[in-house]
Image (cartoon, rainbow, N blue to C red):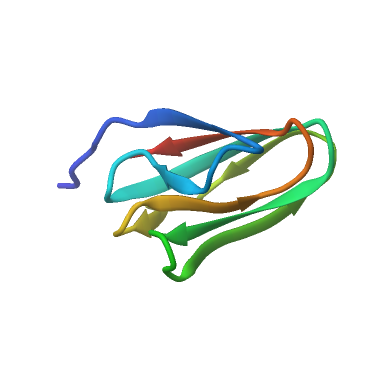
Length: 94
């Protein structure tokens, strides 16, 4: 039997300092981007860890669903880069 955990939403705005978003260990389940301008994002496994997700995006609203059990960030989902202008990022983590 698998164990289920609650999914919580965490926001990060373009221009915010690079930081761990959410708990120190989590699974990335979904990413939602509202882009006023085209840009890109990089999420690493903690500060200085391996790239977990690198994604570019055009202007508009974008939803990236992560299949299966999501992407495990053992040291936290660290938003190391988020470019564009006035862009907003929501990470759904469990």
